[in-house]
Image (cartoon, rainbow, N blue to C red):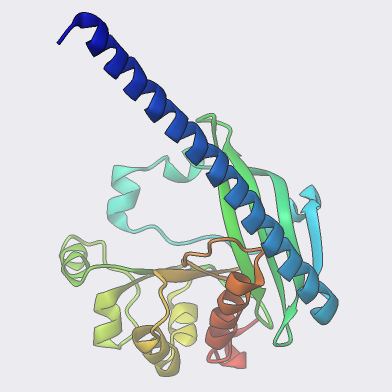
Length: 247
């Protein structure tokens, strides 16, 4: 095979691959744009139907992010291994975009995307939230799903978390809070049973300043196809928390 023929094959193949890549990028961009337009059309329908509100950007909502009691007690191992953690990880929320607000099942909610930075480390990152407000406030609470083996090991290492008394739940979830009593009051047997058996996919939740948010995957919080199920999940949990626990 001549050198010229080899060059023709190589160059031709490269051009074909480049053309295919360009076509894919154009197709993907158009598909993404079409999906976004359809999602926003569905959102406009829900806004008219439900009286919701959409704002492309409103940085005034940044003040809501860190409101309320956010203190979560650190265990002895964390204090020894990372004594400056709370200081070094301080963040500043400076931008709020794609904000959807309204009420769902009688509860106020806010879904949006926030930009944050850590002044000392110089990092910028994005945080997506879907908050549903409870009827009151309380100490910060964070529930995270963990492997049972990890839960047992942490307990032996002195990194044990708040125990609810539900042995199966305590093995499957890590409970962190600023108040063990508040955590146990929220995690009553009805709530722990719900978290153990509900088939929807989530890795836990946070309850800070009376705002409930789950660790769940939501493709686009502006799209009612994803937003409404996420709001239902949060309301389903709030329905199971006794009113007596709120301040």
